[in-house]
Amino acid sequence: MDQSLRLMIVDDAAALADAAAGAIVDAAVAAVAAQQRFTVALAGGATPRATYMRLAGPPFAEAVPWDRTWVFFGDERCVPPDHAESNYRMASETLLSKVGIPAEHVYRMRGEADDPETAATEYARTLASAFETKRGGLPRFDLVLLGLGLDGHVASLFPGSPAAREIFRTVVAVHAAAARIPQRLTLTFPAINAAARVIFLVSGAEKEKTLKAALSDGGLLPAGIARPADGTLTWIVDRPAASLLSPELLGPLSR
Ligand code: 6PG
Image 1 (spheres, protein in one colour):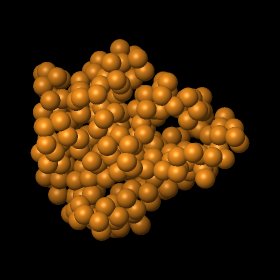
Image 2 (tube, rainbow, N blue to C red):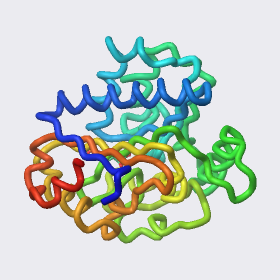
Image 3 (cartoon, rainbow, N blue to C red):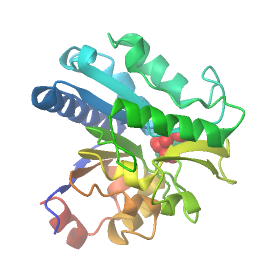
Image 4 (tube, rainbow, N blue to C red):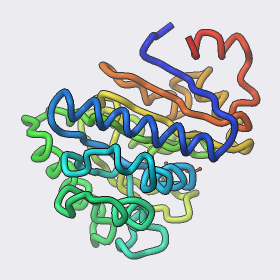
């Protein structure tokens, strides 16, 4: 079993927000100690939202070196930044406006752009410049946070979408017909899997089947493809979401 994969099961949604905020602090402190900066890609969704609210308060907020932190987004819905469905707005309201992060350290995806393809290419350039990658190189985020969609999507990489099989580009525009806001921008798996750490946040009984499938049939669901090539993968899940995980699965996973 892959020793870089860790499963952490906590009691409920509140404990999950606590554990996730703690894990983000740990990643930030370690990254700044090692290379004087911390780069993180945020997720959208209700579970990440609860974590950001926790991270914005004591004792977590004081523990993050915000002036050495750079924030990016794993995905964005194609709406203006002040729209109720904007991931930027959500992160801004719950976290970024509440902590001492310099405004120029926050790189949002331009969900409001007329042409999502252009916005995706622009964000790929933003990443290349922020991470100083050469042509064809991949950004190495210190941390990519991911939620788990009911259908097994991560970021905006949906089951069956060609975007989930992208191998060259780091950011793409996608059209997910079933989603409330179908047009989206997203990091691709090459970008996600180049990260030093990937942390999944999964809460609630409605995710039990999806979580089981993601952990046991790696590769069939987009969530199973998120596996850093040279980094750690941590699943932080609550008991209601973990209720279908069998002891055979749990044993090796939580080792
Ligand atoms: C988004 C996402 C998406 C989300 C999951 C989980 O913008 O919708 O980034 O991938 O993280 O759908 O969201 P919940 O925690 O709300 O289920």
